[in-house]
Length: 177
View (tube, rainbow, N blue to C red):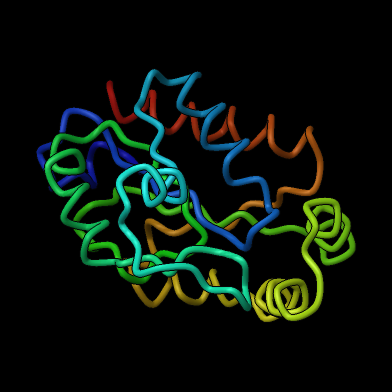
């Protein structure tokens, strides 16, 4: 994510932080936004606040996101740049929105513990663990965006998260110079 590769004309980059639930997306994205003074956008919160969903999925215990409504809601904000977007998927966002895509990954045993502490069980737990085992979100990111802007980072510990925030802060600062 360097200014030399920026064809967008944005003064500040847009970054997508994605990964399986429980990999530390919200922690990383909010800390990065604070460190860089960029806008933090949590898609899950946005969907709830703006009613950008098609109802509730009882099986998975979550809202059924309306991707078109989310994209319509964010279009003007994303064009302006300076956003860090946090969501556990990435294939429906327009490619032109992002200058960098970060896929957070967590060891299965660590992820299992995090998700069970959140109350995940049954199908919801097993689907998310399988998603991480098979690197579904990394593959989705590589298929949806230029591979050169996609990076996978380990997110097993607080130290990993701190190191990731420091690394990404450096990249964002380099964008500005």
